[in-house]
Length: 337
Image (cartoon, one colour):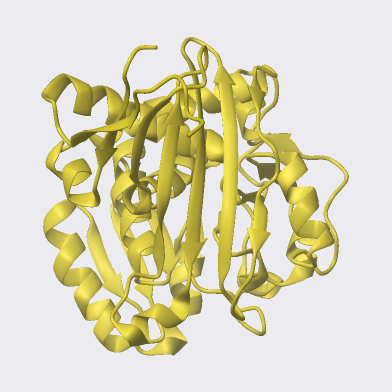
C-alpha cells in the first residue's frame, strides 16, 4: 500500500495565499450552476446544540461538474465566545478526492465560512438587483457586514453608498475605519441617530441583515419598498409575513434546506409556494427579477457546495505554492495487532 498523506492548512496558511476574492466568487458561481443542473449531492445540515443560541453543524457535499470534488465542513457558531475572547465561528473543512475518497486536505473553515457566505449574497445580488443599484443598507457591523460590503462592490461597480447600522457605536466606528480604505470609492455612512434607519432603507436598493438570531424581528414590511432586494442572513431578523405575503419573489440557494428551517420555525408565517433556486437563475432556467418594481427576498442559509468550492480554490493554490503542512495519515496495510 502506498503511503497516504494529506495537507493541513491553518487559518494563517490560508491568509498567506492572498487568494483573489473574485476567484472564490467564480468558483461558488460554478458549483451553484452545477447544483441548478442537478449535478450535486447536498444533504441538509446536521446540527447538534450544546448551548442555547449556538450550533455545531456537519455539512457534506459532492460536486459532479467541470471538476469533481467532495468534502465536509464541521463548523461551530457560539456567539457567547466573544465574552471569552474566543472566535464565534470555528471548525474544520475536509476536502476529499471524489474518485478515491482519499482526504486531500484538512483546513481551518473560518475564512471559508466568512467569504463563501458573502460570495453567495453577491452572486444573488448580480442576478436579482434592479439596474440602478447605487446604495445599500447593512444592519450588523460584524464580520459578515464587512465581507458583504467588500464582495458586493466587486460585483456591483455602480455601488456608491453603504449605510451601516449596529447596536454598538464602537462597532460602527471600527467598521468605517476598516472598510473605508478597502472600498475608497464607496461612501460609508453610519446610521446615527437610529431614527435615520428608515431614510437609509428608503435610499437603498439592497438591504442586508447580518445579525445574530434575536427574540423578535428588526425588519418589518412597512419599512420596505418595491424594487428592493432583501438579503436576510438570519431569517428571524425579518417579520414573517414579508416572506409569505409582501415579497414578489423568493430566491434560495437550496429548497430542501429551506424546508428544514421552515420545520424548525424560522419562517413563522410560512413561505410562498413558488421559489427560484439560485442555480437555475444562474443557468437562465429561472429569473431573479421580472421587473424593476418587484420586491425580491433571497434567503440563502449556506450550503456545503459553496464551502467545498472555496476549499478547492484554497487547496489548488496551496499545492501550487507548497503552503501548509503535509501530514502522514497511514502507511501500514495490515492494522491488526
